[in-house]
Length: 135
Image 1 (cartoon, rainbow, N blue to C red):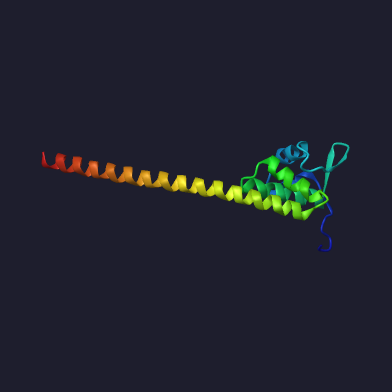
Image 2: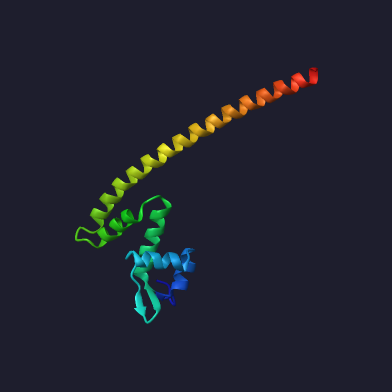
């Protein structure tokens, strides 16, 4: 840890650091995914909260549901710790990869259909233009 680095953060600092809204941070808190210390109405976030928030946001980016993210995070605190977490994560990665690859195939198919339709439309337009020029 660098000298002078904060060991606690406010909700504003956390939100700014991660590029999310205060509402997003409070939502994850309401779901129990992060649990800052409360001092009156102020929320005090510690390194554990930052780590959890980073994991949540990374999981969301790659398509995990909040329930899946919760399972992964909660497993970290379980007796088997990282082994169980990694085994679960590996199975989820396989599922997510298969889903994304299927989506990519669907997108490639849709783009190919659009290319074909565009080519037919251009051919038809060219034929209509040629007929109009002759007549």
